[in-house]
Length: 191
Ligand SMILES: Nc1nc2c(ncn2[C@@H]2O[C@H](COP(=O)(O)OP(=O)(O)OP(=O)(O)O)[C@@H](O)[C@H]2O)c(=O)[nH]1
Image (cartoon, rainbow, N blue to C red):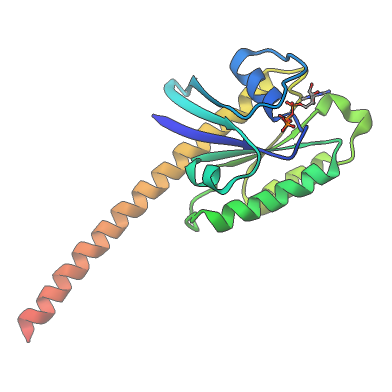
């Protein structure tokens, strides 16, 4: 199964660091001005998944392309946190998510190692995720691989759940359509 993932957030929050950590298990410090597409295979719950990951600033085309979103802010940068709220609104209005389907969005507070410079509390991140029905993680791309791995595994779970929901809805729609056809036929028969 293939899934497209976009990693979004304002400048300097660590989007590239997060992706490079996930792909290579390494932190290299400086990443330059890259906007790139990466492909990576992961095994989640024993099943293989190919992730196409886009490291990106906001763009409507990317939002349409994506099956799931990683929205990154820095815990030391309040404006980057505010930007995540705006990104959620943009995704909600650009994409037609069904009401019962959980949006495949993970909010990530990065640079956890810089806690002495923290300006965004963990609770604020958690609350935002709760109110938007997204997942939430605080990580340090600089110091820790495991929590970064959890971010992408969590997102894969969400993407799978949303695909199951869409299939179920298609099934229900199919049943409703055939029932309506039967009743419509009966009505015309009885005329
Ligand atoms: N201390 C600390 N620094 C980090 C962490 N993640 C990234 N950085 C640093 O933050 C700076 C920006 O990281 P990038 O990964 O280039 O951030 P970006 O969001 O891709 O930035 P743009 O390319 O401007 O969009 C770099 O100097 C990184 O070394 C982290 O978890 N902790």
